[in-house]
Structure formats: C-alpha cells, structure tokens
Amino acid sequence: MKIATFNINGIKARHQSLLAWLDEADPDVVLLQEIKSIDENFPSELFEEKGYNVATHGQKGFNGVAILSKLPLEDVSRGLPGDDTDEHARWIEATVVGEHAAIRLCGLYLPNGNPAPGPKYDYKLAWMERLHARAAELMEAEEPAIMAGDYNVIPQPEDAARPKAWVKDALFLPQTRRAWRRLLNLGFTEAFRAKTLAAGHYSFWDYQAGAWQKNDGIRIDHVLMTPQAADLMRDVWIDSAVRGRDKPSDHVPVVVDLAA
Image (tube, rainbow, N blue to C red):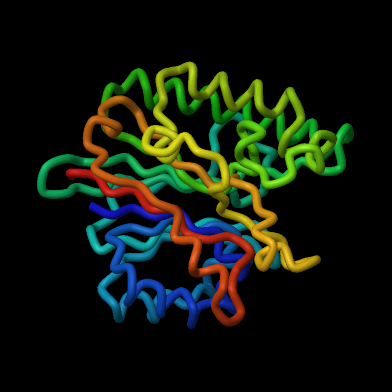
C-alpha cells in the first residue's frame, strides 16, 4: 500500500499537475494539505474518475486537508480534538483496510507559527500539544496508524540547506523541535529518517530567490508511524523531481510503502 503526503498549495491551481502525478506514481492513498477550497468546490469527480474515494475538510482560501484513496474510507473524522473554538481545517482521519492490515490515516497541516514570538506561534505550540494528546491515543490503541502531512517543523540542522537562516523561524525554534521530539518519544517512527540519515534531502523549496535551482530546501513534510505501522514499512522516498515541473507546488510528495 503506497501512502503519500502532499501539500498541493491550492487544488484549483494544481489539480492538473496532481492528476498527472497520480497517473505516474499510482499511490493507493494521498493525504493532501493546503487544498485552499471549501468542500463543495473541491473537484472530487476528477479523482473519482481515476478510482479514488475522496474525503475533504476544506476552508475558503487557505488551509484545508483531504484524503484520496483507492480503498474505501471508513470512520472519517474531521478536526483535531481538544479545542472546539478552532475553526482551521487542518486535520482529517480515516481508516483504510488493505489485504493484510487496516491502517488509521491521519492527515495534518500543522500551523506555520510565524511571526514568533506572538499569537500565531502560541497557536502552533497549543496545536502541537493537542496533536500530542491524539498521538498518545493512537499509540495506546496498539494498531497500525500514521500521522502524515506538512508539519512545518525542521527537526534538525541536517533538514535545512542553510540551518543558520532558520534559527529564529517558528519552524526551527527550540520549543518547536522540543514538541516534535515529544511526539517521537511516544514511540513513533519517522519514516524517512528510519531509512536515510544523510543531510541534503528536502521536501520544500521556496518560490523565491531560485531556491529550487540552488537546492536551498528544507524537510518539513513527515510521516510518523506507530510501531505496528513501522513494522509494515517496506520503503519510503521523497519524490523531489515533482518540484521541477510546470506550475509546481512548493512542496513535493513523500511516499511510504507499507506491506498492508
């Protein structure tokens, strides 16, 4: 079962490039972030024609998450628990049942948090605290589950081409990375780092200043797996070539292959 996370940066602007990537990569499940669309305007029929079931949690103009799945989506829920006043569309869950295992999928778009310090950074840290609570529940269930998406977290210096440029950024502040480590310390495996320890691997390149051409990137799109999911992992990769195509997102897909 190939499961991808992909911050598409606007489904309206990039649905054609997404469709082309689906034809090429043939993932079973895609967790999308930043669809920037209300549910009613998401072009579900384009993906349904390719055999995907679609679940969305949209918001006008920004944020928004979705799941595309060739397998039926069961027990879909929307919104990260813990704050009934939070209207941001940043979290969606569903279960898919493969030939060998059922996987609980959690797609997330974690707040950016800039400028920091400030209210936006306070919101980011509070959101990460709620994420920790949900992650603990997933661990306690002792079932295969993944939390994948745009975390807006640079975990370590090796995950940035120029780490010194990010020292005051909300993505790399010590409090951010501390909250990230608290997630991992629950027992999660970070898929990409389970296979590759080397520096120089990124999932985001800014549109400005020729970042892609200079490979001036950061790695902020992650797949976290419970032990039961990690036991199923066969491979994981970043599909970085997508960034060099016409009208790309500033992010690229991260794909994990599970024996499910």
